Image (tube, rainbow, N blue to C red; front, top):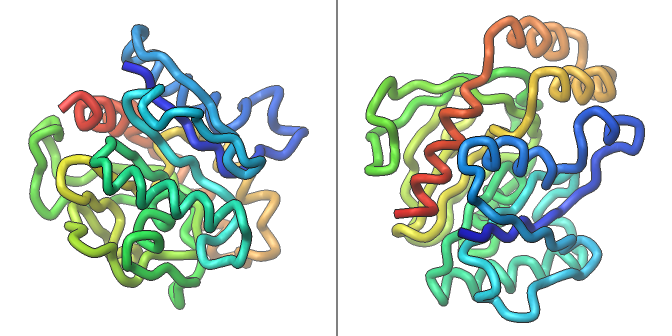
Amino acid sequence: MKLGILKTDAVRPEWVPEFGEYPDMFVALLGQLDPELEFAVYDVEEGQYPADIDEVDAYLITGSKSSVYEDRAWIARLMDFVRELHRRRKKLVGICFGHQLIAQALGGRTEKSARGWGVGLHTHRFVHLPAWHDQGEAEFAVLVSHQDQVVENADGAEVLASSEFCENAVTRIDDHMLSFQGHPEFVPEYSREIMGYRREQLGEQTYAAGLASLAREPESERIGRWILAFLRA
């Protein structure tokens, strides 16, 4: 299987030597779980797209500091691409910004949440367990970093998992689109760096709670296995 990663942001230069760019994080997570998985990276922020939509088997949209409702040409083009993937029923996974963009492109709505920033480790719970789930515990811990939230889901979307902070934490559209508000590709050290960088924006209470949450480990590999099982199904 070949996965096309649609890159929608760049990691701060001083963090790249330790953590890599966002596609590198997904390659590290998914590649270790399936060494035969191939990857292609398209920097859609810079206008890079496949010459043929079928040159890869599936796609994944990364997170971004941008907001999906911003009036930017590259975001509008990416929404058009998502609509074409949907029309062709091509497998697509959305992460954070990607999760929100799928909703925004397909009839839903994303906006800044009145609940403020979600940072650190959050627990989301499945409403019911889809076939690609490991059929274990319904709750899972995932690193998050977002102020925007999906407030209206895409047409035909089903909410699979939620929390008190984020009602639309995991959604799917039929069997070809799956999206997560959380960041399974993040490691705790990267989450800590981001929170430190945004400390003033977050406020001391949110920042302190986010740091304290890192005492627990995220279930990144578990989520990675779900993503691979979904893509293979």
